[in-house]
Image (cartoon, rainbow, N blue to C red; front, top):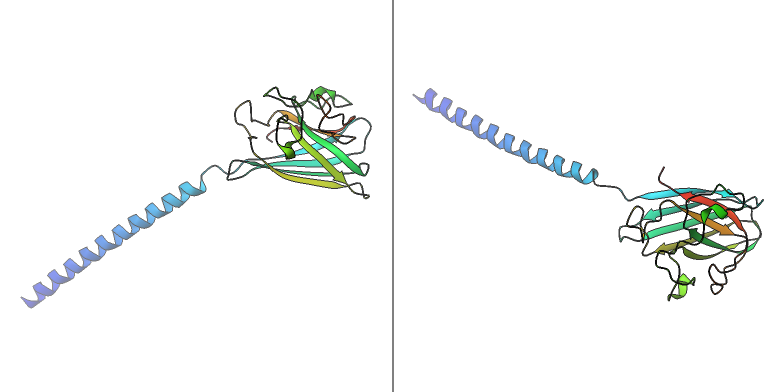
Length: 194
């Protein structure tokens, strides 16, 4: 009789252990499933653009656009092999750098139809107005900024894809219309997903 009670208790313990172990395994499995979903979430978009030299310049450079968690775009421009001084940088409306002088990129990207201006001062400015980048005596320079109102693949009024980054030989005066009188286009790169 005692042997039957012990066997019965062992059986109950075994069933309880199996039930507890199975439920824990299920919870761990669900945890793994949840974390796998988090990993599968869409990563932040970024686009890297190699600039081509234009107008007989020797310019080399890259421009990186990176989507931030707050919805803004981080812009990083890095240039080499150009004259020291200030050089205007803009986004132009057409993603075409085939012309020797960069004219195939069209005018500034301006979906809102406003005057050219200075983004740093607010007021009216083209979506493609970026500003001036200072190049040192070594022929290189960088520019970084965070831009609100640009997207990588958003609607027509914010999407930077299929447009071109243009670097000019001179400074943007921020007042001359329609483009700041910045001189020849010495660098061009198409903004496109690889």
